[in-house]
Amino acid sequence: MNIGKKIKHIAPHLIGWGALFLAIALQNDLSEWEFEEYYSIIGIFSFIALATYINLYLLIPRYLFLKKYKHYASFVSLLVLATALLIAFWLSELDRIDWFSRFIASIINVVFVLLMTSGAKFLFEYLQKIIKLKEIENKQLKAELNLLKAQVNPHFLFNTLNNLYGLITQNNNQKAAEIIFKLADLMRYLLESSKADKVSLNTEIQFLEDYLSLEKIRLSNNNAIKFEVSGIDSDFFIAPLLFIPLVENTFKHGLNTISTDSFAHFFLSVQGNDLFFEAVNSVGKSFEISERVGIGLENLRKRLHLIYPDKHELDIEQTTHQFKVILHIQL
Image (cartoon, rainbow, N blue to C red; front, side, top):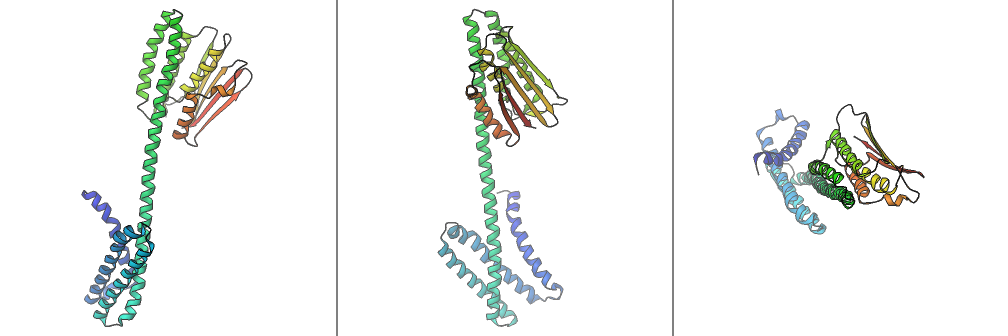
């Protein structure tokens, strides 16, 4: 134990005994005390301190914390009586006052100090338990977030490789080559962002633009893809890869299922400390909302719940011809 930890451990004890001495001083004029009175108060403090530490570090951990209440009650009663007797005889030897009166007064004083110090110990143990539980909870949340974040990469790669496979089977080697080149840049960003808790909003926007350009290579000219950004007067930092599941779902359940006149529109705006991301895409007649619930969207819901608890909304709106998802985050 280094010096800093020793001071941190001892400081509460010094403060407690200092407060007790101050309480006595405020009730008495110490300037009028003689040597015997200082000597008596030192004796009282010594006996009470001994009883206090026996209770705190022996009786409470060994009996009370282990729910051996009868044993604890017996031993603490003996401790109070023994301490009160020592104080009574100590003071009676000094000022010749009736020891029995001192004995009764000492019992009251010892019980008061033990109750106060025991209460302080229980409060300290309770706070320590809360701190440890919080640390464990934070570690679990961090581990869960890392797991969810790690799932984004293979999920994204799986979808893109599917697209690449389709182009290769169609002998469209030029488009396949362009996708491979852009995919390398996207995967580089995925690897870098997966190590960070927060990323620049501007870099996340650039990632989405690169992904959309990759999809434009794959899809026909009949598909209208649009991405609009507004309100970005200054850079913000957000959790990485929050928008890509919504974008991926749009292509998976929208543009991939409609042959002509399909569209996917994306809007990102910042209004004060509020960020809004909207994904709107065309849908076919056979489309049902249950189709939208996949790995990517469930992953996103869990991440939002962990990273932005009570600071986000994820709303879904569906009509006959289009499907809309609106994400609102309080930065």
